[in-house]
Image (tube, rainbow, N blue to C red; front, side, top):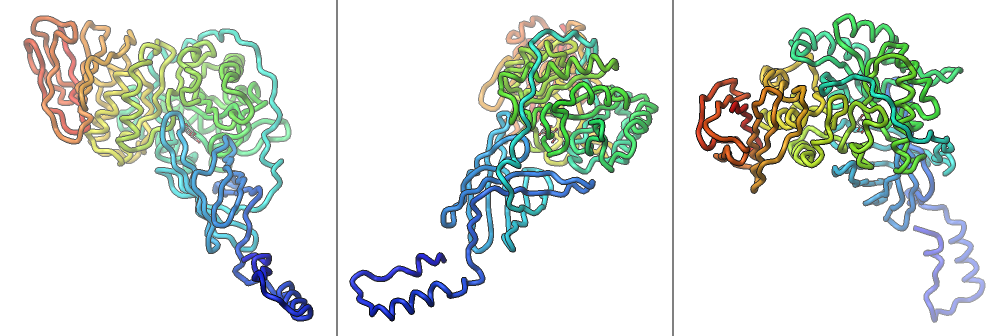
Length: 517
Ligand code: GLA
């Protein structure tokens, strides 16, 4: 309770002057109750130890009014308004609900306030909670560095890589901040031992959280999870595989680690020198420095830097599909570009992303691919029918196939989905002709993609909650006569079939056939 509230005197009541003075004196010098509600208004920095000797910083700009808390959260890469906030009995509860590349995202911050500090737990959807302590700081501490000039636009020459959609593995979906040298080596071993390499998966990509500090010359170093990047790259190469790395055009990555801002040429050289073959370049904190319309020039800068570095490096753009990246991704030297926010290991996330991609399918060309984000197959949050839908959809879309699971521990079903050669062949078809949505009716979607051997891949998707028998008429696909049909999940020739093909499709499942006419 505030002192001023206790000083109010009921109107109309007369007090003797000496009595009033005594009351006033007693009230003014009365000790505050021990559990007095603190006012959290102001700037705070939340430091979350990353377990590798560093911590990530998130700034909180709080405004408290009674038990209500408003303001914004600056997790190093963007500003998010607090959408729900309360502070009561020493407990702070904040929610940031936002849309990230078209996807809903709800992050909660739960804090206990004591001794002028806030002990906090941050809950990201589908991730392990992070904990840290927030202390008061000056608002200037949250300001990004000044904006550096950008080059004028030109076309970066094609690097000649990724003639078919890149295939490999990426650490983020399964390991997030828990990726380290041992995981990467183990996954590289498993890539070979499980037959994934033989099926076409080549890139072993380290995502965010590998970075340490810059040395006195400004060279980026790896943190203690990665004691020797060059040796690690050599190890991965010794298995006949390629290795990828991750950075951001901003000063900080999305997980709050060191980005390439102002060090683009230097970092491209370092990555080449360590022996890396692939870079995922993630917008993150660049949004606090540049405007949206600067995006092309920002990505061009790294496209040029990679070419100058003199090693063939696949260039993956990650800015969640903003600014219609499919119109200019090729011009900045991009081999692939993310078209959406982050996928998570749930049916709703995967189907929302996957079925939204048909409209831009025609922008994918050899060397330059739409990337609807990495695979979740085998991570456990979806049924095998749902994972088959995921794999079939990504393959029809000619999406990069970057497995996001733990390759060291795969079930037979997961292996059968990820290594279905007939499905992979659709993804990798050299003609890269775009998939077309043939029909959408209720929860049924029928899609078809012409292949280089003059056959056609046809998928019958059931997005509904109940099994359904669904027919596709050859006439709707522009086919005549009785083409030969092969079921690509059952690996079975179904013979020649006249007029139409009809199949029972499980809920959230797909029947995928190849039609030869
Ligand atoms: C962003 C990207 C993800 C992943 C994380 C790492 O969210 O979209 O794919 O790279 O950053 O912090």
